[in-house]
Image (cartoon, rainbow, N blue to C red; front, side):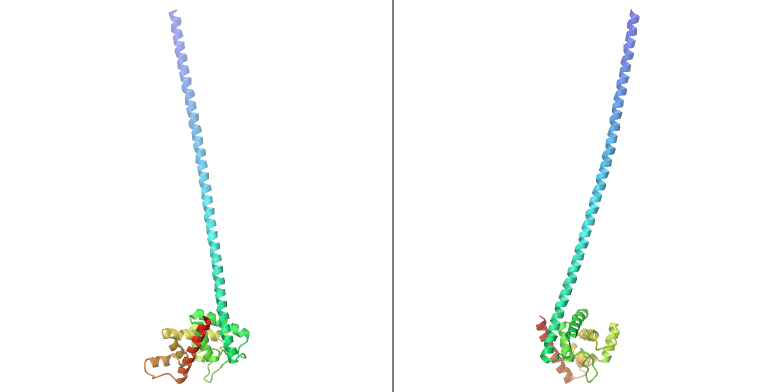
Length: 258
């Protein structure tokens, strides 16, 4: 009887141990499953996070490209606006210049000197070289009025030629300074370019004193320098008269241009 009870206790104990081991094993398997499952979830979360980051980078890159394209487009539009505005201003100045010359020609009955094509060419050259050499348009017109009365084929007794009455030596000097060869000094564009360049040269030499520059254009810069240095007493009567008339035209053209 005692033997049976001992055997029963042993069996019961063994079964309890087995159940405990089984319970521990199942619990470990459950924990391992949870850990594995959690690890899988973490990998999925990391993968999702990576995809979201990539998507955000793509969106940001596209936004930057869009902004860059918009800026580029705006810059192009602004450039076009500036170009159109510049062309519009240039054409306005050409029309003003042409109007002033036309009025003078009609008043003086010098219509034979310039046709409408030459008139437009001359006005365009004046506007363009005025801007290039920083010489005001009314001053170029005033000098040309006194020099040739807008006659492109004018030639003086001293040999000065064209609209702005350039002496051959002065024309060669301007050609060398500018770096432009010429074959015909009577050509409207060439004559206006050289004459305007020479005016700028005189203005620069005499510190932008317009009256001195005008006198230098007529009598030569060396003569003006000698008068200023008191080596010569005064200017020739021709130069005095020339200066007075050019300054008068300058004042008139400034009023008309404004």
